[in-house]
Length: 117
Image (tube, rainbow, N blue to C red; front, top):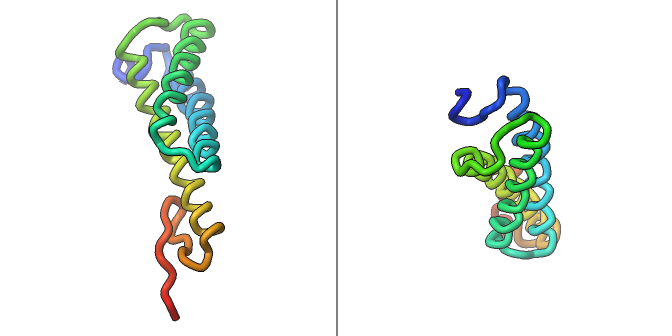
């Protein structure tokens, strides 16, 4: 997997910087956008800025390449996934909480219409 997903010597560095730090920031960005009732479109702009920050951390701390399209896209995909998951998690909670007479939560990322009983 080295060379495909990460350029450092161990997968732990990729998991720490891209998944844990970057993914956590993307999750929180997605939740913040959902809380403000904004659409998913803005998430892409925020994630691209976060990806630049993640690439800089790889470069500054672990001697990775700063301007490589391949690793930029890998990090962007990871962050988009976490951002969308955070957005959907928050939106499901909002729909169930704010429209409790219409919807109920059916899982961590979804909601369904209440039965009229």
